[in-house]
Each structure stands twice: as C-alpha cells, then as structure tokens.
Image 1 (cartoon, rainbow, N blue to C red):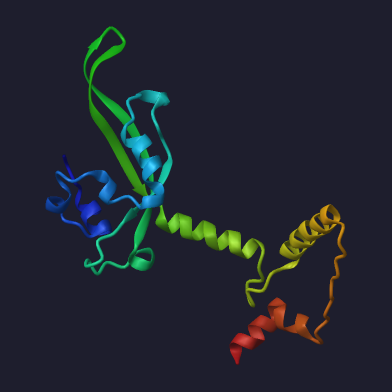
Image 2: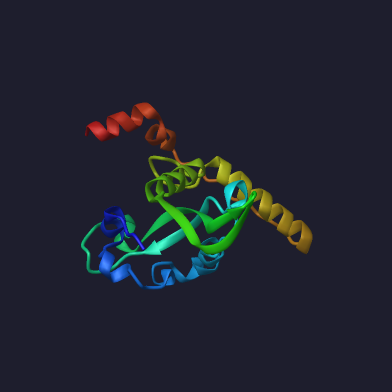
Length: 174
C-alpha cells in the first residue's frame, strides 16, 4: 500500500501508522457505510463509484489546523482492480484503487454561500427570503392543524440606514 506525503500532512498520521491498518480507522463513524460501499468497489470504468463524499478523521496530535482540526471532507472515487483479462472481461479481483480529493475549503465556501442566501451579510439576521419560507411553512402547519397564526411586524426607525451599502461604508470608517 502507498500513502502519499499529502495524506500525512492533511491527516497527521505517518505512513507507518496507516500501512496495515483498516481504512475505517480514518473514516468518521457516520460515513463508514458510504466508505465501505466505495472501498468494496469491484466495478470499473463509467460504472465505478465516483464522487462519494466522506469525512476523514485527523490525528489529534499533529498540530496542523484544518477545518477545526477534527476532520477533512473528501470526494472519493474508487474502481476495482483486476489481474488478467479474458477478451473484455477481467479475470481475478485483486483490490480497489481509490482517490480521495480534499474538498474541505469548497464545502466550507458552499456553507457560507448557503447561509448568506438566507441571512443579511452585515447583521447575520434572517432575511426576507428566509422569513417568507418560514411564514409559508407556518401557514401550512396552521392550516393542517386548524390553528391560528399571528405575525408581528416591527419597524425599527432608521434600521435601513444601518443595512444599506453606504451606511455600511460609513460604519466601517468610524
């Protein structure tokens, strides 16, 4: 088995720590079923598993700071390895070849984008889109349960001054 230096850097384990160990020691418990499916892959080519998202645990003693230093998010692609070919059919299964790509930063960026789709960037308060979504859910819930729903509207004087781009520039200049 080969362990790249990048794996050692990201996870904090030395290659000696990993060689001979079961892969499940690295995979977060919640992701082990998906990982088992990918690592037991026997298919090849277009039918092989690709883009299986799993989280790998880090060695706590490494000191490398990466996504709260607990785990990294990876995108795993796996394909079966065979020895010998008879025509177009592989003969003997000898293992699985897998590549895991670190997508932690991309995942974090996606989370930030998703958050700000429903929250104000300056105050982090829920925005109108989120309010409309929650109001719609509450109306459906009230209708199903035949209950009343009340909405209180509060208009804060000059609050828009704080949330406009010009006001933001003035506030940050102070």
